[in-house]
Image 1 (cartoon, rainbow, N blue to C red):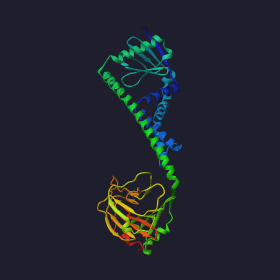
Image 2 (tube, rainbow, N blue to C red; image 1 turned 120 degrees about the horizontal axis):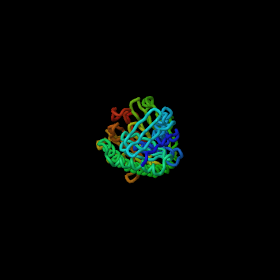
Image 3 (cartoon, rainbow, N blue to C red; image 1 turned 90 degrees about the vertical axis):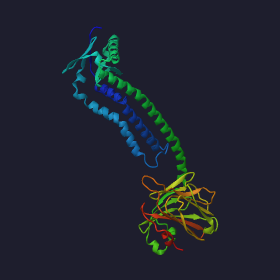
Image 4 (cartoon, helix red, strand yellow; image 1 turned 180 degrees about the vertical axis):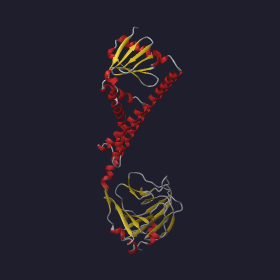
Length: 412
C-alpha cells in the first residue's frame, strides 16, 4: 500500500476518557472498585434502614468504600493535570505509515519505528491505540483514515503481534497473554463473591432487623443511677466500698446492675422473681457442661466477657439449674436462703428448671486476648419472694479473687 499520513490531535476531555477507562481495565482497579461498591451499598442500605447490617454507625465503611472508589478518578485527575504540559496533545502528532515502518513527527521530535515494534492494539472511542513492548504507544484518529488505511494498520499490528521479532517482545507477549488468562477468572470470582456477600448480608441482616424490632420493644436503656434495692443486700461496711457503674434496664425484666467493690472487684446483681416460696438447698441444682442459649439474646458488656440474657418476658421461677464449664467448680455453701459457688474459670448458664430454656449465660472462653480463666464467685441469695443472683470477678483479667469475699460482704 502507498505511504499515507495522518495527524492526531486530542482534547483534554478525550484524553481524560481514555485514561479513565484504561485504568478501569486493570485488575487492581477492578478489585478496588468491586470492594468499594460493596462497602458503599451495605452502608447505604443501613442508612436507609433497609437492613441493619451494623450495630453502630456505618460511617467508617462508607468512607472506606468511597476511598476505594476514588482511586481511579484520582489517578485519572493526576494524569490529566499533565495534559497542559505536553504540547503534542494540542498541536498534534503526525504519523506516516508505510509497508515496514511508522514515522512519528511532532514539533520537537522526529522518529521512525519498524511496524514489527508495535505488538498490541485496542480501540477507545474514535482512537486506535497501538502499543509497543514498553507499554506506551501512539493514538491514531480513526476518523482521519479511510477504511482501507485503517485495515492496513490493523493488519500490520496483528501480524507483528504473532511474529516474534525479538526474544524480549515474545516474552512480554507471553506474559500479557498469561495476565489476560488470570484477569478474567479474577473478575468473575470477585463479582460472584460480592453478589453472594450482598445476598447473605441482606437475608441475615433482615432477619436481625426483625429480631431488633422485637428487642427494642423491651429494651429501655442504660442507667447510671444506683439501684438502692440491690445496694441494701450488702453490709453497711461493704456499701461504703461500692461504686455503681450502671444498670441495664428492660421493660419486661428486672435490671442487671454492674458495680465495683473496693476498686478491685466487679459485681453483677440481678433480681429473679419467685413463683412460690422455696428453699434454695433443695430448689437449686448444679452440673457441668457446655453453655449457651437458643433464640435472641441481649448483651451486657462485663469487660473480658459478656453476659447474654434472653429476650422476652421472664416467668417467675420455682427452681434453678446452674451449669458451669469448669469441672473444678466448688460448691462452697448451700442452705435455705443461700447457694454459693466458686468457679476457677470458664463460663456458666442459668436456667429455671432442668427442662427450661437458658435465661442468661456467660461464655468466658480463651482467645487471643483472654485466657478464659477469670475466677468468679456466684451467689444465689433468697430474700422474701425473690432470689438475687450475684456474681463477683476481679477487675483485671489476671487478678485474684478471694473465695469467700462475696459471701462475707452481704447481709445474712
